[in-house]
Length: 222
Image (cartoon, rainbow, N blue to C red; front, side, top):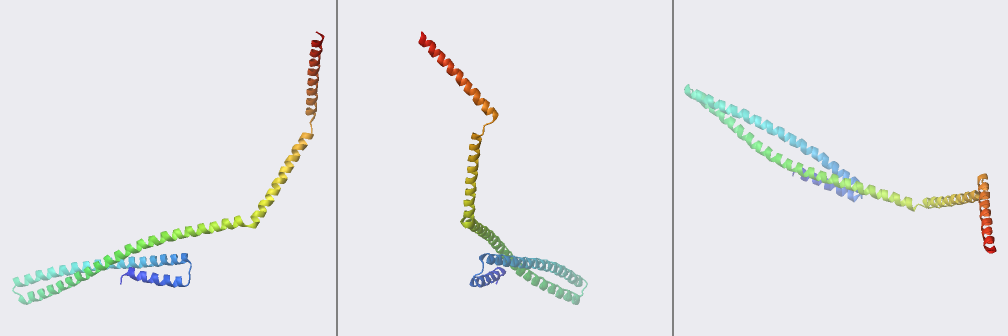
């Protein structure tokens, strides 16, 4: 079973347990994201170990290849010197090195296969993690918007708000009455300048009236 499959089993188990307890959906989302992040760390750690194993196997393969070539050269030298016993020992050591090389190459192929699977798990998990974070952010925004709407609605529907608005309207009417009273008071109170202006206006009217009577009298005498 791959790491990603095991992770899915863990998530499903925890999710079902939380749903049975009617847990908060936001809490479920946070748990899923935490599980994903923890598993992501585990997968990356395993991938790092795999890379270290590959380097170690490649290093050992190079060492055994060097040893194989060295034993092959020694076997040729022994034959040249008519030392068949030494040549036989060198060839035996050469074959052991070749077996070690084959064993390391087989292990390296298995490590490469495991690394490919881990890389695939890592890609899937990373995509799922981003998807979960996006959904969690959307869930948070929706929850905050809903809570704000509830607050606004409760404030609008609050009887205290209605009472305050009624009191404000009463105060506004009182101010209107005071302003109207002030206007009437201004109309009744005349300054000294206003009194003289009224006298001058009356005098002007009297002069024009006398002139009009004079013209009428003169016209009738003709």
